[in-house]
Length: 96
Image (cartoon, rainbow, N blue to C red; front, side, top):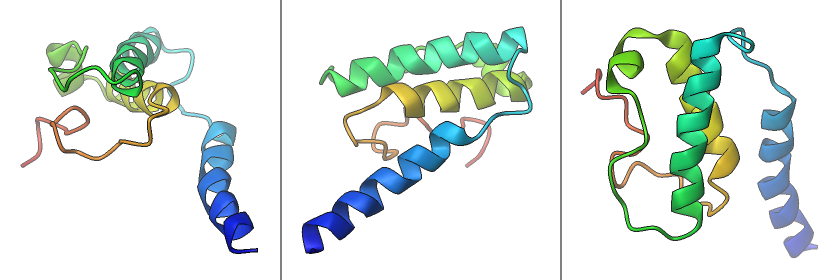
């Protein structure tokens, strides 16, 4: 029973996240951000050592669509479960 609750608590947020859509989907900057975020997330999931994220810093700072896409791509492709901000990979550099 306990294992079932743990599995449900783990899977439910992922399932809900997959069902959400972004107001930026279809925007070329969202798509570019998603690709860069996914590249970063995939590297992290495969155990690559922490490094700078694959990210266009100019677009990250100026484009809401790019940022939203990057975060969505990173979340979708980082299957390692290590999504914390321990390396600055998913930190917004425009905020302290």
